[in-house]
Length: 262
Ligand SMILES: [Zn+2]
View 1 (cartoon, rainbow, N blue to C red):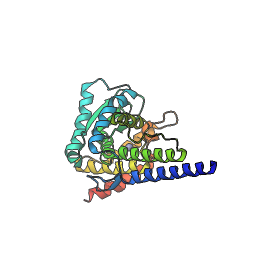
View 2: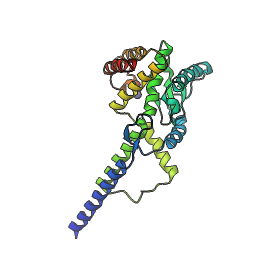
View 3: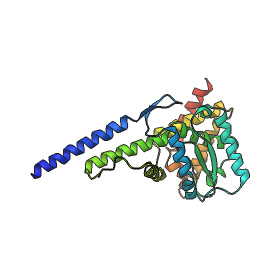
View 4: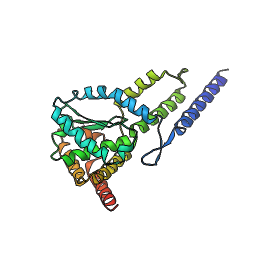
């Protein structure tokens, strides 16, 4: 009796694992901009909706919006300048750029769908508009690369496999779409991109700099600023979630050679 119950649970666990894996791979979509196949469970419209919904919460984490319209305008202008002269313009995303008040934290990030943020802590360390464009171009790259949506699909897979392992999941296959989005927003707060995502975002950044007529060398300068800011007493958050600046400089220079010759 006991034995057959364990056998039954194991079978259920295996079925759940297969369902989770099947679900993950059935999420394969071709990225409309890069043409790359990737596993994402959201439509671009859902990415935009989730991004808009999570933006105020994310902003609040960094002291809310910086209260100076001129500064906000400058960042929006530089960001939109990149969007309007690159493939980002034809993407399904709604790009907008915001400065966050936090003067200490050195960070920039994007939520899915095109809402992009830079902290005052990072902005005040930048010395040229091209450096700002480099930071924003990198973040636009995360949006175009659909990196958040990709990470979410991976989290779902991990969640599904963990559920299968413990077989404690009750019948929760179809949560209401409201609960679904709330769960995504909660996950978004803890999301970290992989190393490959960061390097791909740098690659997009360099391409957009070249296409916008800006100097991609400014991205190397940003890496130097980050390396300097990440001294022993001041860990830069932008760095803790990104590969180390020295490695990125090598890749950025390779991308510069590639896109300048196109
Ligand atoms: Zn990044």
